[in-house]
Image (cartoon, rainbow, N blue to C red; front, side, top):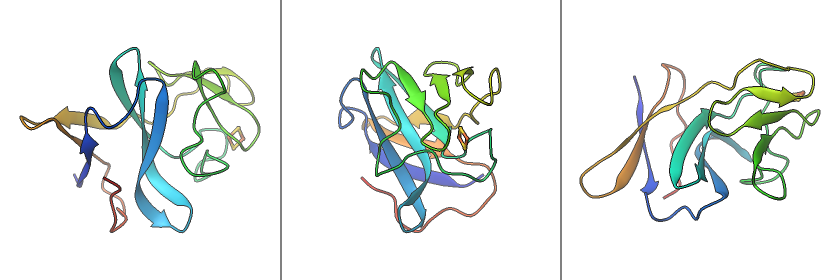
Length: 123
Ligand code: FES
């Protein structure tokens, strides 16, 4: 299972999201969200149209008040903690979670499914 080094746990501010693992220009493999002090990782792949990226611009994975993950494709909203779609065309479907690990230096690592990982991690 490919491992991707993401960032230091303190780098991501509360209520923000950030993409990692570039697979093509403007598209990240996965994204991280910090919500209520907890990090959540998901693949950048909308369950409505598998293979479709979610953000309309870099790191734009959340609604304006940072309470939901949103897909720019057709406006689906997802619970940040569970990844479940709560509004939109893929209601009750789930984002694909990414296993995370924080090492002794506070660096967050992601364990991605066995598919292509982009050569550049943002960190
Ligand atoms: S592609 Fe995400 S809501 Fe349609």
